[in-house]
Image 1 (tube, rainbow, N blue to C red):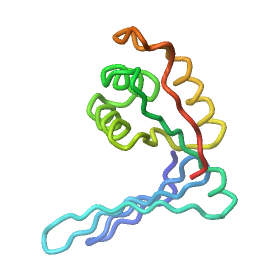
Image 2 (tube, rainbow, N blue to C red):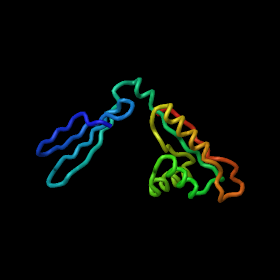
Image 3 (cartoon, rainbow, N blue to C red):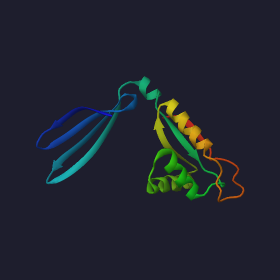
Image 4 (cartoon, helix red, strand yellow):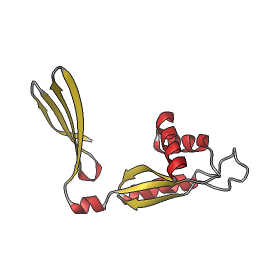
Length: 137
């Protein structure tokens, strides 16, 4: 990411960044009555860019343990154990969870990593990787 602008005033501090796919991310910190209140705005400038945003969805099954999911998400995406556990809990509870958002090509690559990760050695009936699909956001 590159810093596009930085506005500093006595009451508001703003940093605007441009990320992949022309996202505009603005982090603001404003002071009100002695408290600092952070906020984040994410903007996509055109509908064409919106169409290019995809997500990887991990689907639940009975052939992979929480430990497998936590290890896989950590290894593939670099997620902390806490974040990976939270995502594992969501997929177990809801049947699916979005684990990654990016361009279609990047999501396809991450989907391939999930599908190549292999079976869960902790479960004898686990014959392969978890199922992951990609969907436009």
